[in-house]
Length: 507
Image 1 (cartoon, helix red, strand yellow):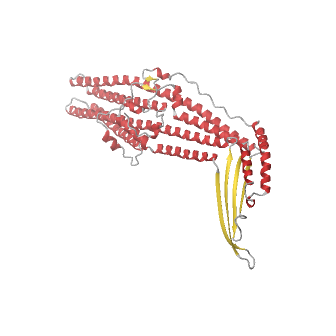
Image 2 (tube, helix red, strand yellow; image 1 turned 30 degrees about the vertical axis):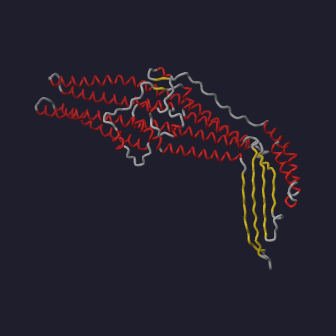
């Protein structure tokens, strides 16, 4: 064994030392005994324990998936690979700018990045387990014995030690491997945070724009209804309208006005969310957005075709799935650490000692010791085996979590894509309904002006138009929100560079 050879080499050095510096014959004899018996003892221990090492849990097979998502049969969805910077596909420069700002300044992402840095530091510390370790102590003392006539004496001592562990059974390597997988896991968590931040920023911006447009629609209808109320009052004073017509028009007008503050609240809420997501501590984001919003701006429209890839690609790409995979690997490595405790640990130690007094000389003040050390948690290994069972049980929990995460991810994508396709179909009917409501209002006004109908038909047509236009804008908002939800479920931003260096402007 290499370690035995190292011991022999160290013993050979003793013969070259001056007589006063050689270790005692007891040390040399002990080393020779260890040298001759260590290999056999270790072999016996290894054979005894190898026969009873419990096997590690077997990782589950990758779940079977279909060739495509069920919703991919729609003309609105493509199996082409997902776009990394999917928000750029909405053709809204302000949306792109806000998402990039959030990926650069969001505090939750900063926390996730700090967690990765901490894990990397732990990995670096664990990697030092393969190297030697040293320690040094020194002290000095001035004292006198408790007897008459004793002199005051000065003494000092120092010790320097070094130790190196031979990783015969992979304990240190497994610890390092576990720490490395922990880094990978937290990197995937950081990616998952980035995916959520990008989606939430897009949703907040879409809500901001959508409620702006809904507010404009409600305000236009309120203005028309206000004009109708004034007209009815004039007609009532001239005997051409009833009090019932006036009160109905007034009720509808006030109801529309009452909806405006709610839409203002939605706008303010979305603005505050954008401030939080982009890391603004003053939370005064609304004025900044208003300065950058074009008067003719509309709700961002998703691309005509959503590229979603295949289910197998989703499993390889989605960060929460990859985080669980890394956690499984980490737990398996920790299980190997526990299994290595069934075997002894071997270390090689060297110590240099010095004790100095006023009367001592150099050659009789220095000593040293060198040799191997064996440590074992046995022969009673019940606690070790219990720890192995705990580690394996935690690994099986991670297996179940992995399978559940994959199923949930596939389900989220299917629901999001189906909702998107159905909302797109619904919007077509709402666009037709809004156009019909506009024509109905024109006809109602014309028939009232010609004296064919009373003003109640005009009021009813105005209410129908407001409802149709508001439903249409809600549907447009929902369509874009469903597209964003689909991209979030698909796990966009799959390249780590998009998280670390997210300030790159889109082309």
